[in-house]
Length: 448
Image (cartoon, rainbow, N blue to C red; front, side, top):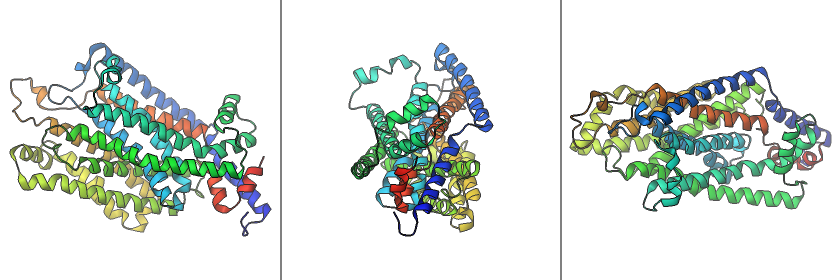
């Protein structure tokens, strides 16, 4: 036990950890309303997807030219946001950045929720989802799609382990402490705590396992979005024909993921009185992190457009014209200026890294990150090497139908439901890690 804390003080602190960790897990009216709203979105999604299954992809706005639309943009966004678990839990954790400890579980919950849905989003883009099994039965190693599915499954498995392993001591603690929990919840804790007794040997093994997973997940996470970028870059298209798409996609993923963590931190802090864990300092540091990854992302954005603009080959010229002053100029400049440039400038000032201000910026950044994926996908497909001619007028442009919007909204609803359930079933506060940092692990394990 730490010399600065007496036994009584340590007991009080552990009691506080337990009270604060259990508070978000209790039901309240807001939770019922929130789940009801998400359930309604899922009902609309189910109806829209039923129509798509019955009538085929003709109910969408995707045609011969824009064969990828909102669905693939959505898939890229979900994969991107899921990388935040690796960034915070693995990279910053391995760098021994102690300030990230209270938010590691938040990042892992977001990562798990988004990556679980990413695979389902791909299926919504298939006119014949029953043929998805053919990918495993007849897939070819030459296909980036096979690599993509492989790394997504691997990343999901490692993210699940990286989420569950640090929970073991906390679940054993809450199993002893939370006497009024439902039986199903007790059984889940009993199974997942793996007979935890809190011995020194168990703690040593736990640390080794977490460190090993943190190392393994880094290349896997980098692979998941790099391979996703190869789905685009391996296609000879103006706007996609570039070698920087791998790191470019990864940098953009860090931006989207960091923004999502900031938003969830603020929601938990505001609704469950967790100011002692998600402090102003944590928001300040997350703001600094968001500035860093945004600057890196800005660098790749400059590269993406400066090089083709200098060459101005015919294909790139048409594509750049559409982005800079054509049909997609409004979205493009909104993303570049409002979604990236201004947030970077504002976050340079400490006042804008305060919780409420930073959350406002994070919401804008996250929305811009989603729009950016649409800009990556759609304009390029509207610029084939041969002119679009002798086809209906609706083939010349793309705007998603209500069915596409409903299916996309349903994917977000499913991800939010997973995140909400994880927050309700498992403690968001990493109690044992905080107790270990304070030097009161022994008191933590003795609590009943």
